Structure formats: structure tokens, C-alpha cells
Image 1 (cartoon, rainbow, N blue to C red):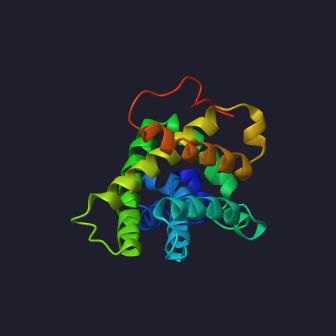
Image 2: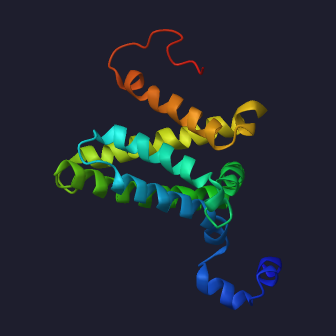
Length: 187
């Protein structure tokens, strides 16, 4: 923390006025990306079905955040991609990120409920879809961080391909009955 505070020319005390703890500081880049996704979701056309709106918003967010304009600021997607790998290998960061994910799911559920004209407190569907979507995105992050170098070299487009592959499996994974062999293999 001393090195970080010194690098930005502030005292540790000043640094911790901006961040409650080390984990929050480390997750700030990813928090910006998550907030941007929420903005994209809120901007989606109201006639889009909820899952399509989520899919389009997350893909748009990854693409937007990979542009040069965002790479210069704290919203850089390269930093977020690197952070995803660090989170999975650091228990305190993983715990902090899971807590943030639960908070984000609530925000997503509120947006979905408003889009669909339902009461988020009474109707389980917005919360359930937000949780399932969050799980699909986390699974995509895990898949991306364990894939070969080819997808990681593709950067944001590689991540988007993994996210879309995971989302394509939602329907088949939720179908009742037995799963056909090889239906869930990765492309």
C-alpha cells in the first residue's frame, strides 16, 4: 500500500479515504467495468427480452471498454482482464468480488423488473435471471482465464466469444430431462 500511495503521491490516509480496504482498491478497475455494464443495460431498448438485453449490454460493455478512449482511463479492459485472473487466485479478492457480484445482481434485478413492469420484491424472475446471468458471466471469466493463449491474445473479443458461448448454453442447461452427450462442449 505504501508503494501505491507513493506512486500516486498521496499518503496512505488519503488513499484510504477513496478506498475502504486493499481489496476495494484492487477491484476498482473491475468495479468501473461493472458500472459501465449497468449503464449499458439501462440503455437497452425496452422491447428487448431480458436475457437478450443482458447479453447485448455485456458484449457492448466489453467492446466499448476495449476502445482506445477507455484504455487511457481507469476503465481499461486490459486491466480488467488481468484482474480476473488475479481474483481467482487470491481468496480475499475472490470474497470481495463475490460480495460485489451479489450487489450487482440486485442492481440488475431492479433494472430487469422495471423493464418488465414487475415488482422486484414480489416477482422472483428478475432476481433469478440476474443470478443465473451472473453465474454465466463468472463461468465465462473462469473459462477465459483457463483457456489457451489464443483466446487470451484476442483480448476483449476472446472474452466476448467465451461469454457468448456460455450464454448459448443457458437454454440447454436449463431444459428438464437428460442432457444429450457432447451438447455442452466448448467450440
